[in-house]
Image (cartoon, rainbow, N blue to C red):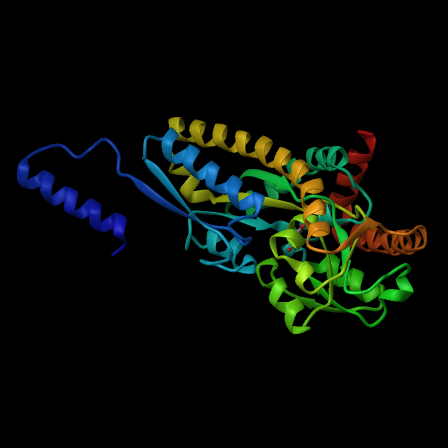
Length: 329
Ligand code: PCA
């Protein structure tokens, strides 16, 4: 028997014995797995969100955050929510492009490379992604972009040719494809495990934000970070749709308010963290600089190929999404 069920059963027995009424509500406990380290800004934001819900519902819904992939690894979080193993959780949805290419809309190279563009792209994508998630038994509460993605290496790299043969840590289909097209060897590794992967030589490069490099202290193994601003992938906090439909209207309002606050706060944290983590990488001893013109033009060419491949895979819905976004500019 689950702990909550046991408590309720005990309360019911007590109520019968004493002839008193049950309390008007039964406290619900929600577990919230998150894939990234406790010190990461998404995780800190999630903890604030959880507290907002617990306080705002007067303890009727108590959310416990499990960061660092401790309860479920990133790749398993979505399924854990869908199947009701947990009530709520956070996931990088572009990790599920193999289910549906639309999930990769936020990782299309150079389509929306700034926070402003990424916000517009999300506006264009929101109705489709929300509907897709609802079909999968998931209700979206909020989402927050990672800072712009740049390239990490343990050597100087000035062109795509310099990337040939490098062991590259990927985190979704897009990043694995980028590796293939640049002649690197992709290996999928969760962010929580990258410092170990770099230390042991399993990988020697990645594309990611300054935030992940900083959280993982990658200066212990790597030497260069090139600002590429390739895309800003997003983390999504989702609740199991059945669990959500069981929430009272009053508590839904509390949760929605906490979610809007978390979305705004997370975006600001992401912006602030961009320069902060570049500075941190430098302090750690890394060279942090914009990618050379030659490297950028090589990457742009590869980006075009990847954009076309994505449009092909995502079909009509993908085209509508990109057209809607472009019409906003
Ligand atoms: N960090 C995550 C996803 C994007 C990012 O900046 C990672 O490297 O896995």
